Image (cartoon, rainbow, N blue to C red; front, side, top):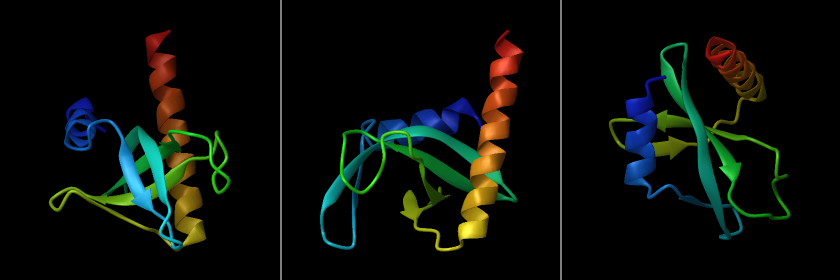
Length: 99
């Protein structure tokens, strides 16, 4: 994913992404990265602060609708697993390039 897309996303969201859970509680996230998988973009989010619902090292994955600047929840567990695995492999490949 291009650094420009990630920078634009962070700039539009002031580096902090506020999402509201089903109970109306606001949870703050930071952007770990954006990846493109099978023609769609996905935002990988990390909790910005400790909370009871999401572990510190857990990644929340949302479909990123770039034209609307919207994050869309994903219900399909298999898709979430595929996107996460793809993103990890992509990140591992980038780390290898730096060495």
